[in-house]
Image (cartoon, rainbow, N blue to C red):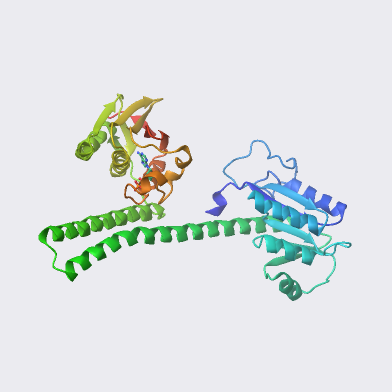
Length: 404
Ligand code: ADP
């Protein structure tokens, strides 16, 4: 999976007191730059300029864009590592000379660097055997490092940089997944706690004293409502789980979006009317069929329309079908509370709920992330435009096809 991705910048740090050695590194990485990882060993002509990706690269293959920093002494190396953390663009690999007369030696430099950035992959490059492997490991407090003998071999440096940069990237991806998993579990337990708390309180109230029949109905209603809520959460989780699994099969069939939107209006107009809101379908397309999974497309339209009703207090909601460049644009427009520009990107993230609405309405913040994922699988994307206090418009385009 990993090798299918395009690799962008990788940052490499060189700490060596000798100018000629730093130059040698520069020419090594100049050769690596702009080459695909696969091609790299096969091609020998180094026509790619340092810092510039070679023209006509195929974007689908992995590619190195090495950002090289050279430092002539330990202190300078430590300083750039510190800055890289501040900039949010840390180094993947550091090649450090062991003996640097006049200043810190390589070991001390590495020790300080690791204190700032423990993730960096370390390679000590040395002509001598000043320290044993155990001594180095003990001193820097890390067992994962490499030693290369000077004078170095160009291929060896390249392969080392490539392998370690890939390992560094894989580790970051693993950390990110781990972080997302933790967040997900934290959010889940938060979402489950509230309904369970309400159900448990209602049960206690029913059991502990003799409630009047009105009170009993009220508590049973609570239990019913919250159980439904938990069921909805389970449904959402099932959707997420299914979409995350690699064998989720996407069905494509001919769907008449005009008919589908009519169904949505039929299904939800009673809910809109309860709030005194008009739910209208405005179709301006002649060709109104698309290729999609009917149930999934229905789920998206229902999600967007339910949201529009939920976040609108007065005015109207329109389902639009418009023809745009051979595609049909499906839009749900409301005159509701709107979404601030800062939050417009975030609402598609799992569990995200806007600050202004989270205390007024109940929800899990999963509907939009599920809808976006479904629409992405149709090869499109839901876009939002909104103005706080005035309303929102959620839309996506799909290639239209003749219905007959
Ligand atoms: P939920 O509605 O369960 O909170 P969603 O993922 O459907 O979860 O939506 C995420 C958030 O986006 C909502 O909590 C709400 O703050 C905001 N939002 C979604 N649709 C609208 C809308 N039509 N108008 C205003 N805010 C909206």
